[in-house]
Amino acid sequence: MEPWSMASPKHPGSPGWTGPIAKCTAGTKQEASAAGRDLPCPGPEGHLDAHGGPSPNSSMTTGELQEYWRKEKRCWRRVKLLFEVASARIEERKVSKFVMYQIVIIQTGSFDSNKAVLERRYSDFEMLQKSLLKTFREEIEDIVFPKKHLMGNFSEEMISERKLAFQEYLSLLYAIRCVRRSREFIDFLTRPELREAFGCLRGGQYSRALDILVRVVPLQEKLTAHCPVMVVPALCAMLVCHRDLERPAEAFAAGERALQCLQAREGHRYYAPLLDAMLRLAYALGKDFVSLQEKLQESQLRKPSPWGFTLKELTVREYLY
Image 1 (tube, helix red, strand yellow):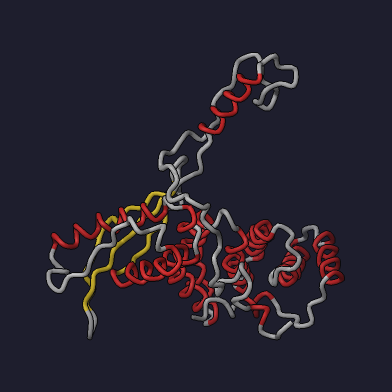
Image 2 (cartoon, helix red, strand yellow):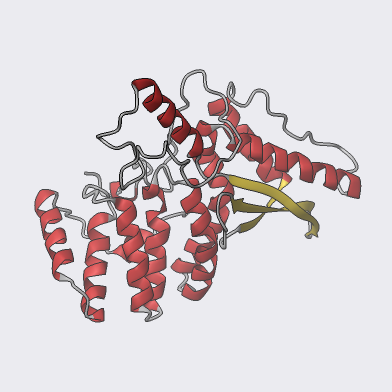
């Protein structure tokens, strides 16, 4: 193993990974946008078991069973995200002037107490469009990107027009499965905030880093439900911040979430350092540390790690660029 591979962009779970996260199904452009109910539809009365499915002793015909499961599939829908460009403001700097658009992202299907609020400028949207065209030109060929104008960019009429255009643009991109799961789309919505948070972590500004992470991590989790391991670096950063602020209980809670995302992937570069940090926290909190110690020992026996990076040494290497 090369000495730099522990934090290498070659790892699909790494923030530096530039390869595809998921591929589009051939011939599929967009998914249905209709959001269904969260609860399954009731099945035929008298034929359900204790779990709500057809009973093994059911007298339903094959056709009835097929129709039952068709209804079940129609009732279960993935939880969607809704995008709203809620407001805009003009920002003036020494050598530039531009419009910042405020994007509000909420989850449908249930009450969302963790709505995301972020700001992006026209050039950020433009960079997203250019990067998506490199990989998904065919998939997004019918999506119109708001054009640049030489004059009138700061007029109230133009700003209002672009607010609506960018809102529709994000919604249409999100409707395409392979696009919403792409590194480009996820980075557009999360990377600036994550870079700032990890920069604060490197500078020892743990409280400031946590303020940003508690806002961006819920959005990152929603965007990466198909690949939870992508959230592990941010959750580990939360652990490190809480631990160094002498909040062991909060640090342990963040670590538990990270372990759940890893799903016992012993080969992942964060697995052993995270277990080691959790073991120490569990011991300090009077929790069961023996099981964590056994997992760590088993992991080291299966795949020894000669570099011995601590969890903090790993996290400070993330989101450098």
